[in-house]
Length: 413
Image 1 (cartoon, helix red, strand yellow):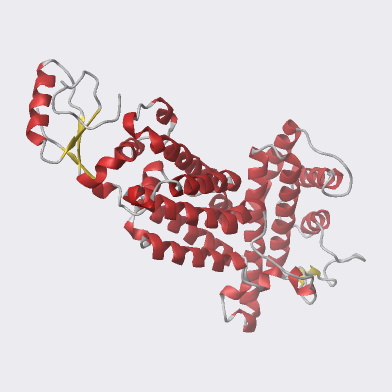
Image 2 (image 1 turned 180 degrees about the horizontal axis):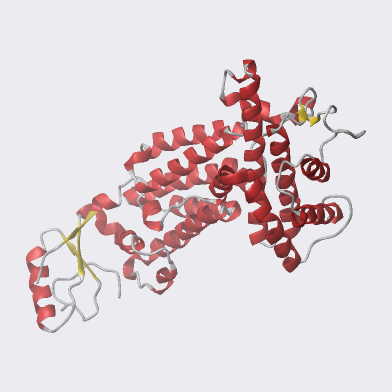
C-alpha cells in the first residue's frame, strides 16, 4: 500500500491494513469503513493524524509497524509516496543503528549515526519535523556513546592508562574510567532528550548503561571503602574482580568468534581462562599481592618461578585439589595454551581455522562456566547483551512522534 492520508473519496480497498486520516474526518472514515465491511473487507487500523504529524506520516507509519516486528525488510517494500525523501533513508540508517546496537557493532552504529545526522542537517531547519529534530540529537549522542563506550566494550579494556607504570598491573585497585564516561553521557542525553523514564528508547539505553556500569564497578576493589582495613573483605573483592574480568574477556572472545576473527577470539579466551584461574587461586589465598600484578605465594607454590601463567595455575589448582579431578579439563586448557602461543599475536605466526576454533571454544566454555559459576555466567551474558532498542523506540526517542497521532477505534462489530 502507498503511505498517504485518505482523500475522503476513494473507497477503502480490500486488504488495507492502515488508514490514515486528518482530525475532524471521523464521520467520513466511519462511513467508508461501513461500506468496506458490507463488501466483506476487514476493518483497517485507523490512525488520526494531527496537523503537526502530516509532514512526517512516513515516520508515523514506521513507528506503528515497528512496534510489532523486529524485521526491517518491510522498509524496502513500502511505497512511501510523497514521503519517500527523506523517510526511506532515515529509516534505513535508523535500522542500521538499531541492529548495530543490538549486535555490539560499533563501526556499523558510528557510520549510520554520522550519516543520519548529515542527512537531517541537509534539511532546512524550518522544514524539519519534531521527530527529525529529535533524531538529529539522538544521532549525535549515539555516535558519542559508540565512540567512547561501545567501541571500548567491543574491542578493548575499560581501563585506560596514559603512561607505563608498575601499578597499572594492579588494575583492580582502580575504578575503570569507562564507568564515569557512561555516567557522563547518560547525563548529557537526559539533558537533551529527557529523563530515562520518558521514553522506551531512553529507558533501553539507560538500563543497558546502568547494568554495564554496575558490572564494570565489580572489576575494582575500590567499590567498597572499608575493604582496605578488612583483609577478609579485600580477598573477596579481589576474587570477584578477577572473576568479573574473566567474564569481560570471554565476552570479547565470543564476539570475535561469531565474526570469525578466530585468532583474537582464542587470545581473549586464553586471557579469560587465565583470569578465571587467578580468581580461584585468590579465593584460596594462593596469591602473594605484595608486588603489582601478584605472584604465587612462595610458601605454597613449591617451584622456582612464582610468576603467574595459565598452565601453572591449572597445575597448581590440580595439585591442591581445588577442583574435582578432570583430565579432559586439564588437556583442554593445555591445548588452548598451545594454540595461543602459536598465534601471530603471541609467539609464532599462526592463525587458527574456523572449525578448529569452534571446537576449542566448545571444549573450554563448559569448564569456565563450571569454575566461574552462576555469577560469572551472569556477567558474561551482560557484557554480550547489546542495547535492546527497537526501531519504534528509536524513532520516538523523545516521544515527540507519538504525540502527533492517535490510533482510534471508529467502528466495532
